[in-house]
Image 1 (tube, protein in one colour):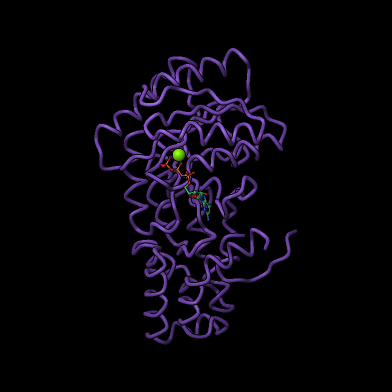
Image 2 (cartoon, rainbow, N blue to C red):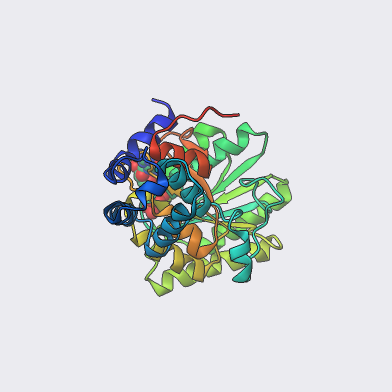
Length: 316
Ligand SMILES: Nc1nc2c(ncn2[C@@H]2O[C@H](COP(=O)(O)OP(=O)(O)OP(=O)(O)O)[C@@H](O)[C@H]2O)c(=O)[nH]1
Ligand SMILES: [Mg+2]
């Protein structure tokens, strides 16, 4: 099964919900003459975790569309919600100017901190990222910054061996900031292109653990000026609405520069990506669609929405 097929399968439930709206083939203007269609659409979007504010805006966008069928209008409106770049005018009002000058997944700087709650797929994602960038000619290092869970360093070490990536290890129960400091210093002196720093899973509601993240961030900057250039939050797509709360709390503690959504090959709703992009103005960088190192794809909003509706649009 290709990754796109796995994504399509994962989003099957959400798609079924949208298809309940009645015929997506119907003329969009005609659809909006029927109150039940609008209500069904509203329900389907909210059930898919799109969130109320975005749902209202999507419906408004669809209502304003010039013509064509309901599905095309809906796909356009959803794509727009998933692209901070396209929504730049709106974000500028909020004092946020996304950087559109560089490739979307080209990291700024050399150090990427990877954070998130327990079990969302941080360590696996780091392995995937290592493979992704090495295939594109970058040199890569990992830091086993999860000193809390006994097996975590070993887990990353195994990935490092498999992929041929050097791993800076700490001591079990030791200070994660110390590992991060050593790794950032080593990265600098070796001139490695990219360092991915693993961190222990933590609940976004635990104050001390969020403070620890801030400390890790500070020491990386101390070891290697202006780093980490990126802080990526890993979110499990199956989490649903709680994902937004997680993202907000992590963003408060250590401002995020990107989000990676994993397990989109499971029975995820997928709609949660919308309020995250919308409320944080942070781009989705990659999506995880399986457990193997190759199961990571740069996020493409158009592709994602096409998978959601299961339509094949040949790539230009
Ligand atoms: N199906 C699927 N499974 C995934 C994906 N990403 C990670 N996993 C699985 O999720 C489980 C947890 O992954 P880890 O990488 O250990 O998660 P973590 O966030 O590092 O966990 P902690 O360090 O304990 O907080 C593993 O079984 C992974 O194989 C994905 O995209 N799809
Ligand atoms: Mg881990």
